[in-house]
Image (cartoon, rainbow, N blue to C red; front, top):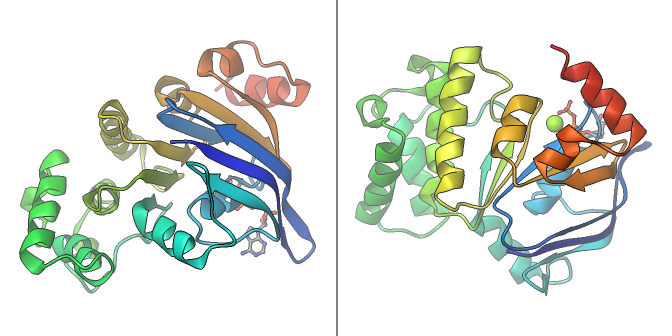
Length: 244
Ligand SMILES: Nc1ncnc2c1ncn2[C@@H]1O[C@H](COP(=O)(O)OP(=O)(O)OP(=O)(O)O)[C@@H](O)[C@H]1O
Ligand SMILES: [Mg+2]
């Protein structure tokens, strides 16, 4: 997949969340990890990449197709991606399995038996079958996130966008979810994720992007970016957070 962003700007009132941001990601990159301080624009960038929001100016191009002038391309793009956010991913009034099946039927136009088959395949992948008839309140945080991940991959997404998928979890549940993400990335699923877990970022990323104040300060392989960062701000940030 080729992704190009050209001079993207996004403002919320007076906050300039993304500033003239340009980015080029080309095949065969599988896992892109966004890191950077809180408020640097990671979640904003993820929402724009998934076309959940539009920029104030600039253009997004996916596989040579410009997205923003074309409403049909935008809708199609939105349907093709899988999302996982920090928390509140599951509908509380539906069982875990219904949470996966219902969007397949309502949003993606699948028949009930096909939706059930896709759901069971996704559950099998994450060993979640025994819990599928529980409601979200009866699941642990790690299990809820694994169900949300199963839902995101059940649609066989072109791109999986994971915004801090582990930040609401304790260390054991974090490890559980990270293992699933690692398995997905090994199977060739294109993933863009944001995280504050530097160890994980380093282990799983093909490319790391460092954001600060709505700009990309540095982009490179994990070896380059964590091993010998060139931007002084990145050096300083990493030397602080990697100490612990
Ligand atoms: N819907 C919104 N309304 C107003 N301001 C917003 C909105 N979304 C984001 N912002 C602001 O835009 C800036 C970037 O926010 P964003 O959530 O993208 O940062 P982030 O890098 O994801 O931070 P974190 O690591 O804490 O999740 C912040 O200053 C934030 O307060
Ligand atoms: Mg965020």
